[in-house]
Amino acid sequence: MKYVDEFRNPGLAKGLVKKVAELPRRNVRVMMGGGMIAHAAAEAGLEDMLHKEVTLILGPGCPRCVTPASAIDNAIAISEFPKTIVTIHGGMTMIPGSSKSLEAKKAEGGDIRAVYSCTEALNIAIKNPEKNVIFVAVGYETTSPTVASTIIEAQRKGVENFYITRGHIIFTSIFRALLEGGEARFNGLLMPGPVSTIIGSKAYDFIPEKYKLPCVITGLETCDILQSIYMLLKQMEEDKPRVEIQYSRCVNEEGNLAAKKILNEVFEVCDSPLRGFGVVPKSGLKLRKKYEQFDAEKVYNVQLEETKESKGCICGEVIRGVMTSSDCPFFGKACTPRRPIGPCMVDPHGACSLNYRSSSVRGLLRRFT
Ligand code: SF4
Image 1: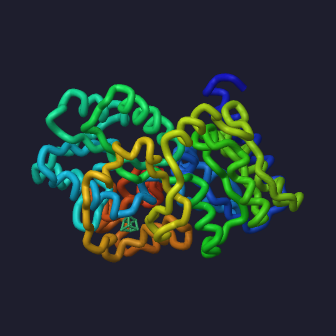
Image 2: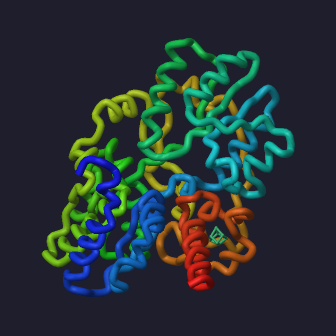
């Protein structure tokens, strides 16, 4: 297949659903290791298409959801320093900290600006030499290499008023923590193609080797996901767990070597807090000594009071796959995408937001059909 329409072909999708249904039926729980997979699956209505003995559950793959409240608290505290501009990806501004979001802080007068990229933040720094510009760095290896290249660029240009926070997360570290915790019940993992393009399929070898679970790296179109589910079930049937690449048009074993090289040049691995998991060893990235002049922590000595998650919100449990949004008393009542309480309702790829939107669509269908 070559063109995107082919990956959404209804006839092909039906054929794949049939193939899945023909495999031996058992109560199978498939974890989608990323909000992007869940978003694509929800948009295509895959849950309703699949046999009910195949349950899709959402794992901790959304970077904004696993970013802890302390990262937001830290950015808010930095914004209170004089002559300081805080920049952050637009999708992060509504993520709640202990007492408020960056959007609320902006409404109070903080100089907080939504940007599309770290490069845009660097340009703001270049245009405002009398101010310090901070980029709140969050996300996985899909974004961290571009931040690394921006840091190299800032050094090359001799920019002295530009800094980043320590918020990057190593994608596989969350799944190591999840599997080590042993709480979530699932029989196989679908991993997202985009981040796997950078890190390569070998990064997941620990999943079948240590935890004996099948793992398939999937693309994000309807037929990609259906084919990946078929590949997972086939592995289960054969009882030979391994890492397979369905998204072979972009992913290989080693990943993007140029991106990995630049990441390694600029960053080193550190322990980092993750929402729902606490401090996870070797899960984050911090600037190497050669680039530490850009480390916001070296310039802003922020002493945070104890971080508090929104009272009653069970995002941590939802992220770990041990509870679902419908177990939360706030779901669809006090907490909606318009008035979110926790990060999983803010991000369109978050579990609560996805569940809210698909339950609204189902409700409408029930009303009008
Ligand atoms: Fe948190 Fe809202 Fe989800 Fe409940 S429904 S877990 S309050 S984001």
